[in-house]
Length: 229
Image (cartoon, rainbow, N blue to C red; front, side, top):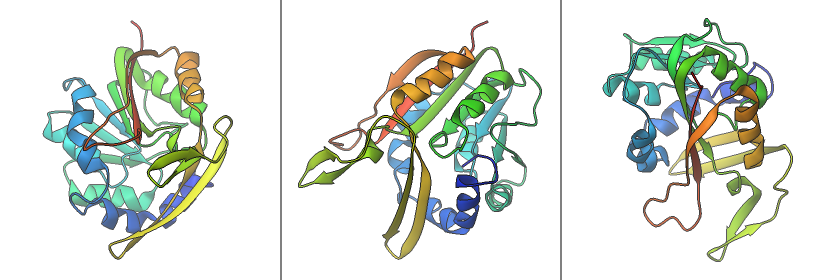
């Protein structure tokens, strides 16, 4: 989770301790099902990797285990503190995704796992990603699939019951196995994400709708993009 300390960012900070418990239960949420497939999309370790919206640090730790030199950033001080506690040797900073404290071209890879639907300034965040990427550097992102938050499953059929186009706020309270979490963010159509990449000059190399364990419709959308040399 990354974003300015208003609206979505503030709400995620309020949920931070719930989130730490939620994500650190092995096998509990979708990350554990999709993780290995997602990392097939991620290039091999290079000079410097930015984990944008690092949360409590699980993606950063998995990147480090694969040889990446990782810097993690998040707008939630509580989540950054949790990331540092789990990985004392790592580098984790509190930062606004639309105003990153790094020089131009400071990274050759940015990873944003299920982050961009949570930021309040999507175009500004993508511009900052492009700025901190060196020429030839790559972006690997995962978002909840744009169609997922515009509908619901009814009797095994997915039904669109909310607008697809436009920018719409979403909030969902989930309680499962004694744990409670409130998710907040923004619904955007796919074209909002691709337009942000296009306006920043990032070129899409791969776009995937992962299907694991018999998914009937896509939960995630993954994109790998590159900043041209």
